[in-house]
Image 1 (cartoon, rainbow, N blue to C red):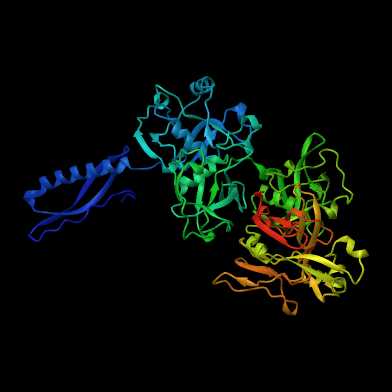
Image 2 (cartoon, rainbow, N blue to C red):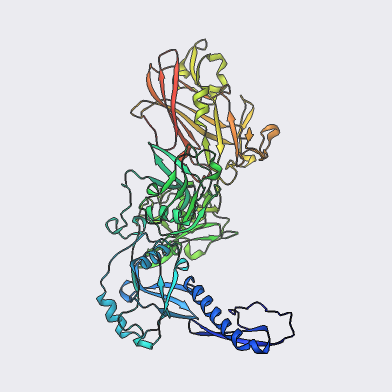
Length: 639
């Protein structure tokens, strides 16, 4: 029996009756489908029952066919010969794979809304007009194999599979689409993927003042959704969050339609306010801020932060870079494909100043997520000897680049003091990463001044926690210290662990403890124009879970030389009365300043988002008292 057969219910009679297996046949999209149905009847009723069954089945099948969606095995944009070497491919004949064969679609009933859906699936935010003449000439010369149906998209679908199947087309070989030609689509790439800025998609917002951004995503085109309101970034609550709203976000940022609309803070928790709740979009808005939403986010917490995964263009980034010699696909020596003597050849990257930011770009380019470690020695990974030559040096990345060759580097003039070889750059990658965030409110509430004698600050001076003038200060003099507590949360998806292993921690005799990270935080006092006027730093002599959210168990405790770290959902508190939890402001004149705290300032440990590692506050010092106010996390600081 056919897999697509529809089985009718059994009809029974309490009377004496006969029965038989009655074959019901009908045509559905040109295919005969048969179903054998056991029908009970009295001999005199056979004719009437047969007619009724056929009428019912006809009405039923007509209603079903009108609601069917497009189902094909595969789809592609087939570029012309002159455009096949372009990356990304943005224009060409649209072909669908059905029954194991590639087929064209007749454009007689094709609309721009259909093209919009196709472009979105391929990672492009919009469609553009194209010159039809060369495609008509090509279509006349080529043998055509048309698909048997038209397509009806409204334009806000995220995938062709969500579009309705149109009418059946009578197939007549090359003369099937007599009044038209095969469908051609032409898409506009986002600026990040365009050959030049001028040809890129014009975003819905001004470039210098974006309204929507993604944070915390491991791959290109994914992340937690954050919106800007009244000068402050906030998150979106996942109530009613769906693929349509996610697609608006993706297109606004220069990507295609959304692959997934994620809920439950799947890509990490944000900070600050929840700006939008119960978002409802039509799918045609230029920005998420144009959608209907509830401004009241009462009951929404950051555990409900919405996120997206967007379709991005096939750029072939992963073909220009590889990891070699690692124990698994997520680690190894970094090798790049570079031009050498007129041909492309694989080579290594010089590890001078190679760090976490550079490793982050490598892992993202390869689609392997975040970096977990950056290695400056890779002798233990036996890569291919033919790729030992250093072909890239002086690499400096900001961490936002899509590919390693977008980072600053020396170009053709290679300079590598280490000489490559065993000192070639390497990485290890991971799908998840921690995300440290400072609690700004705790800093505001715990700030105060203390005058402390020099004889009580000997250990702090040994660890360089005082200003340089303390070196010449009288032992009986006092230092004025700006004290505060810091509460550092891990809002990421994996535990924050020091990069250095137990055996390499540094022992400090004076304080009688180990430092797992020599510089964990920077504390700075800046003038209003950004000039540093006083500074301090805090080594991580103890990274542990001071407290955790409900239901989360503490994993790290410093007692007895225990494992150090901060568990996801937990926080580490450095109290104001701990040594070095201050800035020495003895030499500072009264006035208005900016107080700044930077966590993990040297990027020693990889995180999913470094932009929220900075906190800035306004502060006023009158010579005897200090006020700390308007503390903000991240890039946005309201003066």
